[in-house]
Length: 194
View (cartoon, helix red, strand yellow):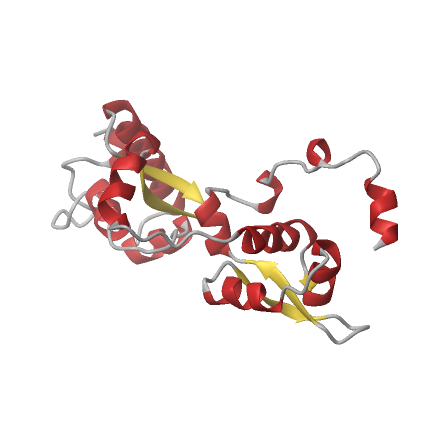
């Protein structure tokens, strides 16, 4: 382990685990990314020291070719299965059932992701079909959430969640791919016709 991650060196009091071991033990049990600031508060260490240790651990796991990866996504850090091992884990976990999103759910999620905050009516207008049921599914799965109310129409607005970012492996929405290459040349005309 990298010296910056603090292998074998006890904490500042001399009696606790090393910073690297402490970070690993916490990150092993989390089910969503944890911010460096929170880890620093819990471990009573400077944030920069925690950040340095997290990056060192991540680099170490990559260099060693471990089956897991420590990644910074959605404003925090979390362990993930390394990409080349994902098919094996999927086969182990799957047991014949997959909880994949339907085409309608994927379309609705894309509209919310690129147009947020957006109302159900706007999603339906973009898709050309009612999306109420699909939106309930996305809400139940934690991929979208309410984001207030439109002051003009009083419609509930929706946005994607940090869980959405986590599932896509993104740090922020700005990392979503550009849509322009996938749109038809007459997109403005099509939009006006709806």
